[in-house]
Image 1 (cartoon, rainbow, N blue to C red):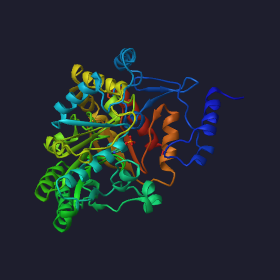
Image 2: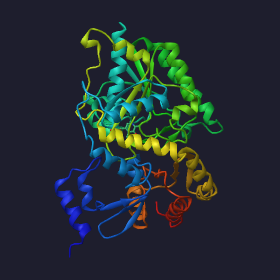
Image 3: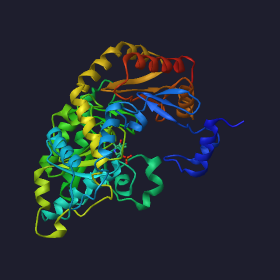
Image 4: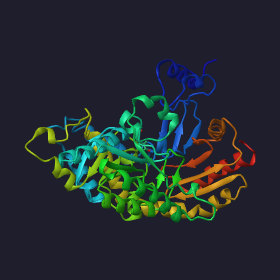
Length: 438
Ligand SMILES: *Cc1c(COP(=O)(O)O)cnc(C)c1O
């Protein structure tokens, strides 16, 4: 007897090559067919609901089938879905660029489609800036240990996740890695701030040796998501900004995952009171509706490209650059932030569940419990091989979508989650801990 779920997962296995997946694994671990979504909930074809604890890979902000974003898109569909952005413009892309400039303090927005394309744009723009300024020897890039900036070849070169990059090493460009400020790596008795500053010393040593050949340092501000929600003290960003200024190296803030309120401020860099030379945005920018990314930069960088010479311009493009529907979704996301006082509401939500998280964190097998904005994370001690898959399957059967990274369990829900729903999610986690699932 074939259920409706079974039918879709069989057809999907046959026809779809799923991302970031050894497909053979799906012989034993079933793909989850999703028929619909509403708010924090996803539902399969047999009516089972589960709470989207990972915001559908960190993109969803205001829930699935959000009525406001839906309405904005329906309205936009009646006007213009898309037009070439080279030589043409449209209302949503102009308004979005103006609003993002106001929010970031960076006045020029260049668009791509995915996060990885934003990383590529920032790297190419940084190098090209130095070249246009007569410093074409500045070709090097620096990233942090355990960094993640996407998986196209240029982005993968500045990504330090061997599982994703080792296979392709012969295709990648050598880049410099410096110590991660991740406070889990601090010595016993060393504060997060002291450790962050020690990590910054490592960056300074590299700059002392080779800043003349370096174009940019790229960082995920405050939290390295793919490293397992590795959080760090803002002192690192302040020091990195000062070192980049001192040694003439660009600072690229990859806010693809952490931007749009995830860390508690609109952009994570705000917590260090710094402005990067480039900021990469994607994921939450459309509320999880449509692929869109943007790189914003300074007037100074923009001016270095502004010339009679065509080749001094930034000759980079993607077919869907500045897609009108995606920009309209992004405008509605920004309108929701303003109308609903989202950052304040998120702070209240996090405060309301603080004692509940503290109770979970007190479990003897929980390590490094941490919370930043709308992210809750911890490691589970004594995890055995296959831990992440077991937690995924067991939590899903209990109505909670979790995707642990190794032995790191995290919750990164849509902002529309209520304190009661968060407590429910913590309760499922508590049960898995208590029943000894390792
Ligand atoms: C997800 C992510 C990317 C890549 O974005 P894609 O849309 O998956 O290409 C880049 N940087 C960070 C920090 C990310 O979390």
